[in-house]
Amino acid sequence: MPHFLIMKAAIKFPSPYSVLIIAIIISAIATWLLPAGKYSTLQYEKSSNEFIISSSENQERFTATQKLLDEKNIVISLDKFKEGKIKKPISIPGTYKNVEAKPQGFFEILFAPIKGIYEAIDIILFVLIIGGFIGVFNSSGAFNDGVGFLAHRLKGRESILIIIVTTLIAFGGTTFGLAEETLAFYPILVPVFLAAGYDLIVPVAVIYIGSSIGTMASTVNPFSTIIASDAAGVNWTVGIYSRLVMLVLGLIICIWYVMRYANKIKKDPTKSLLYNTKLENPFVSNVEVSPKSKLSTVTKGLLSLFALTFIVMIYGVSVLGWWFQEMTALFLVAAILIGILQRVGEQNFIKEFINGAKDLLGVSFIIGIARGVTFILSEGQISDTILFYATNLVEGMPPTLFLPILMVVFFVLTLFISSSSGLAVVTMPIMSSLAPVVGVPPEEIVNTYLFGMGLMSFITPTGLILPSLAMVNVNYNIWLKFIWPLLVILGILAFVILWGGLLF
Image (cartoon, rainbow, N blue to C red; front, top):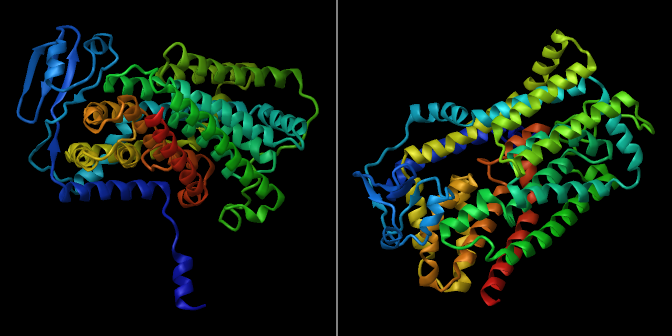
């Protein structure tokens, strides 16, 4: 074999862990190349009714008044702070200053993943408990029977699964920010889609694209739309029609895109992007599934409890304000109840629970390591520098050019600040202050933020895509190859909707 062919065969796309470590190293190098800088920040203290303004030199306290906000060019109503809608420190426009550089070296790179794991321990524990829950449930055999029953009932109509699941998850994303919670769905839905004759990319696409398009077109999502609107000084209902158009048209496009791929590979498995990869068979799950026309009473009871757990989780998050502590406790209690119903005994319960958690240990590490990138940028004090340069880039542009370029700016910024609420409170006070200067309605700044951030969420390695791919053992490069045409289509659609917002 020629030497260059041997070299080509030896080249392999790095694992998710390596991708994130490379991102941490690149971020650390950036702290040596970019000047360090900080915006002054303002935070409300409810107990004293004071604003705390922090700069690189000092910290000052002022009585919380609307006049002070106006003097600082912050277009947020004082009531938003008093009602607790703006809790995190916000950047003050026009206060960026260069500060002493803090380049990140070897030890900072070494400690970043560890700090990230500490920071993400709530999500990590949630994922591990879900793994234990799935492990206990799988030991009953009820899940395999349920998948077999579903495969029997949907014979010839499997594409309905794609429409229903994508729509439901997108609805969760647009209303209450369904994102990290989707990690719980992979162990359930992957065998279902595989039993329907699809490859491993299809369930990832249905779950992740559904969540991402919902987030991109967030209509009432409190973690992005409402926080961003409050930080931009506008009511969250203003501009909702553009988001609804994005949601409906974007969801239709996403469903069409996934169904097109799914139908193509079902007719010809060699068309799968996973064909001839190291996966032994991307169309076969690790459990034996045979079609079943009936389910036993015990199996129905176990499946009902299983489904009820997820219904309670969704209700708790969307209505009761649950977060990871409550969700983790829910799955732990549900695992115990399933163990009791199965009468597996304490030792077998612990064994199955630990084995299930072990299956998701790699996913948990990926979530923690991804947070390490944020630590490097923050401690290297270049996050605000990147925002400052981005603001200067779009300032003074005509409205028709301003919004598309600003969307690209938010697209890039999301790579560095993957938290939707974090990106909103950091960028909105500054970007919204440009709206009257450029002649753009402030609600369009919010929509631009949502569309740019949402578009990057499909691929950002510091977000949830790497943990999601790790759940099914699909490489990141395969995902990029699959998703990039859809990103182009959605990007064009977003540009058109933003321009339409200027006209109507």
